[in-house]
Amino acid sequence: MPWTEVAVECAISSRSPGKKAGGRALSYRDALREALGQALKRDSRVFIMGEGVDDPAGVFGSTSGLHKEFPGRVFDTPIAENGLTGFAVGAALAGMRPVLVHMRMDFMPLSFDQILNHAAKLCYMSGGRSHVPLVIRAIIGRGWGSAAQHSQCLQALFMHMPGIKVVAPSSAYDAKGLLLSAIADGNPVIFIEHRWLYDVKCGVPEKEYLIPIGKGVVKRQGKDATIVAVSLMVNEAIEAAKELKDGGIDIEVIDPRSLVPFDEKIVVDSVKKTGRLVIADMGWRSGGAAEIILGRIHSKIRKHLKADAQIVALPDTPTPACRRLEEAFYRGSGDIVKAVRKAYGLRKK
Picture 1: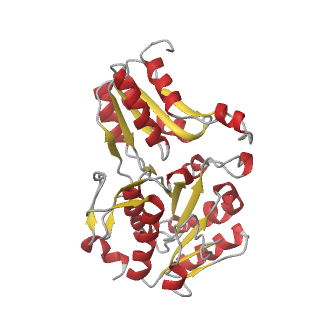
Picture 2: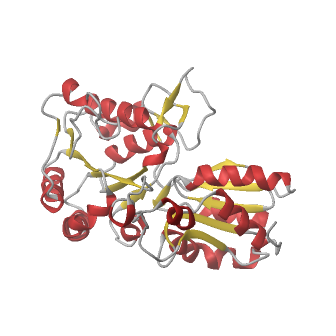
Picture 3: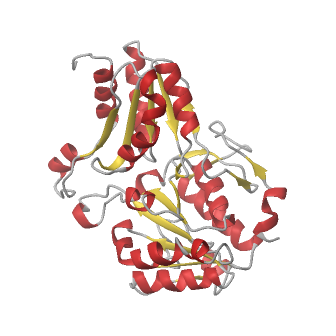
């Protein structure tokens, strides 16, 4: 069955289930693999390409064994990012639905010409006669001493490009539903995955389901302050909420899941209730995703804020390599706690 009919058959969901769904828990990597297998089975136009997709490790396990199940449709590629992306764009224009895997987002700038000047614009430039149903899986995040060229979170660069959708699921449930939605979409989608999420498990239905791109979710209900957290920072925000609860501050955690399009309403409604806002991202602060999000919604929340909105993001410096500097550079639950306390005018403990 082609993707033009998928919404009729699949369950449409906009919220995450509990720890188990359908009697099982699945890791983030296994949810990705299951979604890819179901997409390959559903539609013969879907194929997967990228460095290492057919290796025994299978991109951290997310494509493991698929090249055996679907011969010729899951294949390794040379290290030639711009050329590979051009190949994928051309295949999408010809009616295929490629999934291109970039194991390191750091090297996606080598593909900017294909992404910015072709994939993002061809539908507009053709008056809607051409479409580029391309999914680019972009793996990001802190490694283990991966330093300045192998650990960057560059999602803000793609948020600046009209014509591209950008999603960043934080759970296995969302990863499966959003990946299936991205493959079903008729537009180019940058699908962002943080390496540290691959082992995290939650309930994931075995059947196919779609999560609408552009629909956020409230991960934790609260009344005193709103935290909008991106990808891995959702987990950090949940941990921060537990600590703050002990101090009598009740936190609401929102996972936008999609950065472009962005669910402004879910954030505005929350801030109207809480009066305080913290945005937590994994990229740099200046011109980063957090500043872009705040810029989009500030005029709509300004009169409801009881204190200045706070941003938790990386300092404007390349990523260090040594462990001691990494500890000072990266942000986590403790930084979110400090930001919330600052919004309350409280001193550090």
